[in-house]
Length: 234
Image 1 (cartoon, one colour):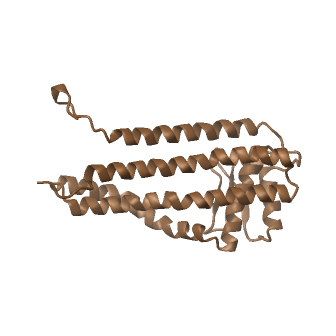
Image 2 (tube, one colour):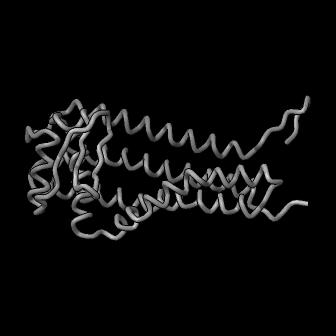
Image 3 (cartoon, helix red, strand yellow):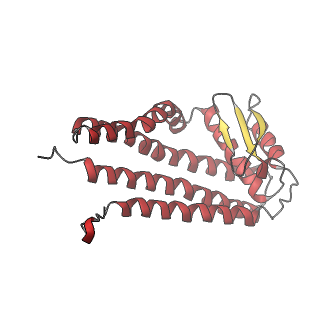
């Protein structure tokens, strides 16, 4: 849509704005929920790292180490090195939120041990996505500068779509890890009923961030398709 004085408005920017808003809302929800339950102590008295060690041992996993990593909510499981890394806000805290997050990461370690297929697929996609996401815009921009070369642009869009596939595959991996965490916490007696319900709120808020990320990625891909996905222009 054109406006006076030569200004041009690209309506597809709305897709990016919507994606950014969705992501910010989900992130805000996650942070506020984590802060709320980080002030609630778990009756078991275990810290996040201690709970993780207990869960791993009860699952028969003895070759995964638990380490501290800097940052806030930077918790993750590294399947290549078999290391469960817990952030400063999780490692030494005995809160509901900390133990819930630690249990969630243990869920990934258990997935790895049992050969959970979506986790395997996601792991295989990581190097491809890392390369594809970096090169996608190179091909798209090169195609634009070379007179709207559709072959280059379309190849760039295909590379970008790999990141979208990665986001979508991530969803069942994260949902399953949370489900495993909640089941473990309840069955092992680390948490009681009310505490499990509170942990579910924390992990549900965390899951929203992955849903938001997938939605934003899909909207970004839709924008590229709308802008450049057509046939060659005259």
